[in-house]
Image 1 (cartoon, rainbow, N blue to C red):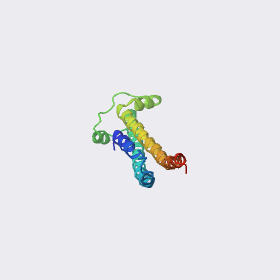
Image 2: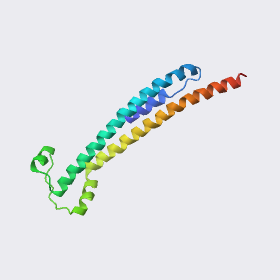
Image 3: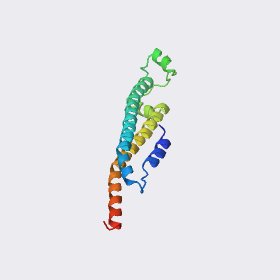
Image 4: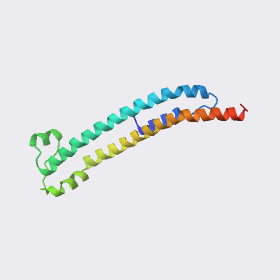
Amino acid sequence: MKFDELRRMVSVDMKIDGTELDIESLKTPQLHNKYLNLYHDERLILKQMKSRIKELVRDKWEFYSGKMSEEKLERLGWEPFQLKVLKQDLDRYIESDTMVAREYDRIAFQEEKVDFLQATLKSITARQWDIKNAIEWRKFTNGL
């Protein structure tokens, strides 16, 4: 799911209709379930991405250290690296590799999505208190 779609969906779902507080209160468990499922799905995607980056970093280590086999180079579609990289410089090459950097950017973006969903779940939990406070305020202003 795209982040913009997710934000739009949350802004629509989190609106509380002040004229039907009882119905809004009853919608809270369904909202919590909806966003809990999204949260878990996106967290699983994040875990998969973190696993893949480990594999990519290992492949890049083999590539830059000159230890990658010809078959693997061919399978990945990479040309052999022509420079001899010193062991202490391998991390610098790996970190600055465009494929690795792009994957780390994707992971950072996915982490933001997961954090947003986690904050949304907290907000949904607080929603019950907001509804309760609105009801109490109406009772107070009506002299009850």
